[in-house]
Length: 434
Ligand SMILES: [Mg+2]
Image (cartoon, rainbow, N blue to C red; front, side, top):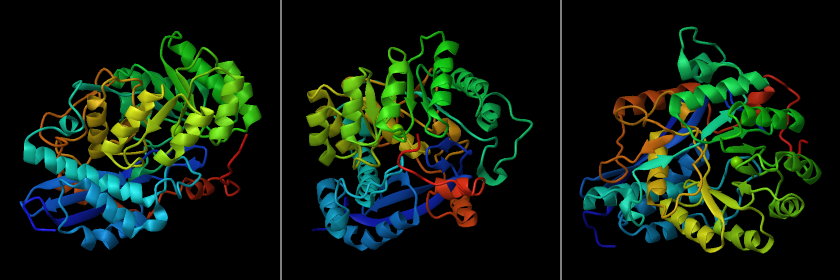
């Protein structure tokens, strides 16, 4: 390929670790640090594009392995870049190796997403337009997100782990507080909604037995006078029988029930028994899964994630398919910082019709890697950045600090099971817990 100013000259990969509270889910508890990888793609013309993806050693090594193949490729030709990534890792093709955990573990989609977002950032800077413009046009300047509640042990994570900062106030205090009881989770919901003005709420479940979690979800429903749209997600650790039993209790009370049971077939069977909106980020997670989804109607709402569906343009393609076949669309989230948030905001800004507030873990992190600190969540919305490209830039001092965290913390991959075993040696990941 002839070298031009748009050719990739260098790619810088920086693994980072950011403080993460001890949030509970079906596979265990979050470690004190969440891992992310920050990618910088630099062109021959001297323009830098940035992106952020979930971190683990394997992904980092895979990017470094493929880097020589990417040097010289044109950032305006992401399809060529995708072909290079896919042909370098042929055994990791779309739809394979997602793994059974609540988060996705496929490498090709992660790497391509990182490259595509950085390329779009560069294109925006070169063309002096926003990424949302490149995704088809900017339909809104405010993108709505949902409050994301977690059962949790006390502590804010990071270097202080389970310790509490007695000077903390407001959301920062609630962010550190233990939330395992009904009143604890309601306090968390109130504090989060007061601080950020969210207009809908999601509770991550799957840790405690269903009777407790369902009771707590209904208590949140009541605490907000039954007017707040509510989602609940036990991450598919319920059997079909358990799912049908509790989905009936939820009828008429939830915006949607997310992944109550495992697999498209079980989701469809539950749906036949209980007419309640179902959402997924677990049973329909790639384009290869879509024929099966349409055949059995496994869910009503697909939760994309641009890190797992292969970037921002793929997410727009998924949106179009959802609309064509009468499915709702929203976005899933894992612990993340402002560059990933910016990517989600650009998608939200470009959607012709906005269905459901996006998920975000963003309030759970109290620092960021972008200039100016965290993007503001106000009235439940994040304002689309005004600058060209993604509209956010890396804070070099923060990047260095969070990279040092990574080197110091000793974590190389997410392992909520191992973290939980430090507290309960008998804890084990199981497909169906209840
Ligand atoms: Mg989910």
